[in-house]
Amino acid sequence: MSLSCRDDRAPSALTDFAFAHRLRVRWAELDPQRIVFNAHYLTYFDVALSEYMRAIGFKAPDGLAKHGCDIVLANANLDFRASARYDDELLVAARVARIGRTSLGFRMACFRDDALLVEGRLAYVNVSLGAHRPMALPEAFVAKMLAFECIAPVRQTV
Image (tube, rainbow, N blue to C red; front, top):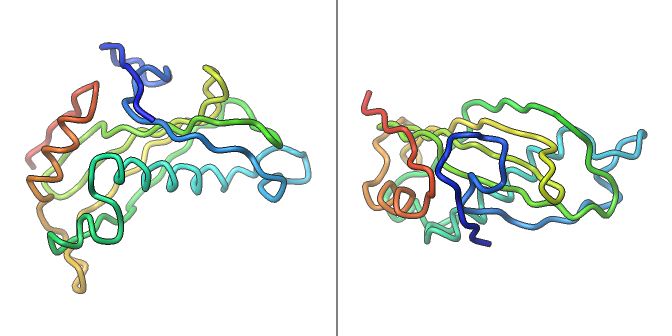
């Protein structure tokens, strides 16, 4: 789902994201408090990342593999602001906030309507297939992300 974007840097607004994917909370994702168990938000973010990759034409498993590489998660940080509950319809948003030579920084957010529930910062490293050694991001991949995003990612060449 493509969204229109505003041009400021406030990370917690849905309008900061060019991409969001709808999910509905299932019963099995609840903890004994009857709210979404915290670890499930990483799964939600992974689903959103997969759909983001599909939206820019780099659907797994072949999207990056045809360039001899894939991205792997190196770090994840989540900030919890409010809870989702059974049957809530969520929008899980993804955007590339930083592009390095061999790595990417994604901003992720989970919204119910316009309310921010969870915000995430995920760092991925681009690695060669097989050896899993860091390698430069394919230029075609970088170009697709830059063309897709409504807020230009920070570019790092180091």
